[in-house]
Length: 574
Image 1 (cartoon, one colour):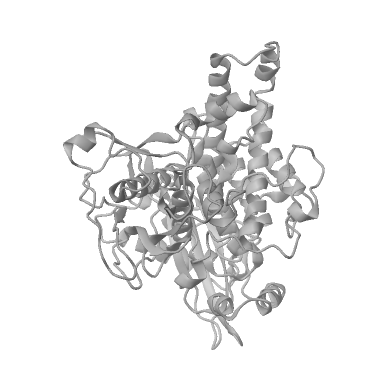
Image 2 (image 1 turned 45 degrees about the horizontal axis):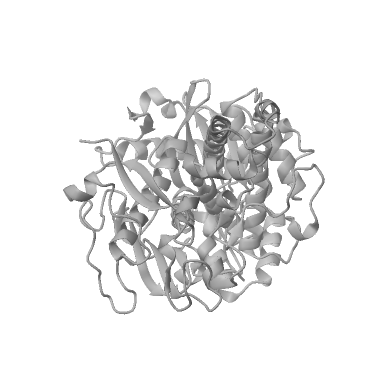
């Protein structure tokens, strides 16, 4: 059997010219597919929400399509839309799998739909200029709408714009679903940063995936002659969506809010501390801070090469463009890994941008202690430039930003030693066995629960003794971590989420911690949100007083259930 499948797609969306690299071929893991396509991770169902009508599914196992890298790009062919939705979904899933060192999974899917752990993709689900992830349906839903009178370039007014033909938006929605599997309580809107983190994180994945296509990067670098990575080919998100459906002048979003790379703090209108920003606008601040750190590292690593190339008074030779593009692609790959891996070091709920920065710094320090190029310095500088504040630290030094081990001292759980867990190591991944009915992970979770729920350790993990208003703690997840450093060194850990609920007058208030355990069973970090925190409870109440009723209901709900209606504005500019 082949190891890879090649499928054609749009690099951005149909609005781009072929001379801008509009058509690309994605290489994704091969798996036998049923018509749909339907595989082990995604099932594409081209169904209409209102009528229930199902469009004939594409069969990518046909010999002709296997030999020709699937169907050619088309702005109107339903079977190509099915192909592209599957291809970009698998591309995104594979990057998460590589970064995390395990199969990421999708979490508790299918409250109303199928409950088999597979994500449904509906390419033309509704006539609406929107796209969203719906946990209750277990699906990624994409809409379509007629182009407005101001439609630009290759779309005339009145023609259909299919959002599923935007590679950015497919990757964005897939990232929403994968992040929900990693941190299900991140969809509780308990703080202005929480929903914005979901949006910004998903945009970052979409942007850095773009750098996986060398031909696009080479075109962008040739356009700027190697000076920067600010080309529209690389930084614009949802180009067709913005130009054909929103205003005719701008993309949906961009990765650069404030131009330049100075160390001066940006104007407040671009920064984190503007209280008027809604979740997508605030998420754009996170995107800009991370992308600026990426641009800083690119400038730093290519400084000598670009200095030598300045001797050319005319356009750069193709060899120089190739070298600069290769460097940019490698840096982007590492940044994407950093962005994804940091989620394993985030608290289980109520995560702020500053805490996400701490997760980035801790996760990267684990992998590259010396950091000779200054990746972490670039992150700190860029976050500060965009006015992001970090709570509960004395300063922004790297040592101050690292998460800490338990306050009470060394905590060892011998049962979590990797030698006793029966883990499976295959294909460069480390994960729980799938053929034992979940017994191995259940034994490990029981041992972990006994260790963290002891009364003398509860404070370390944000927990309190159960009572009439406080439920017993619950182990939400217990996952393996595998980290491969640039040097080739491999590190294995476990990461767990323990969550506890307390009844307050509005509903349920959550506490708990993310716990990182070494391969020999020693607790290394406990990233806690204390259940008895009066300050956090007040902050949550203050924030929710200004929100609509459906948002308040979701924040205080007993279960982390996401209404589709809360997510329908994922791509609508306010």
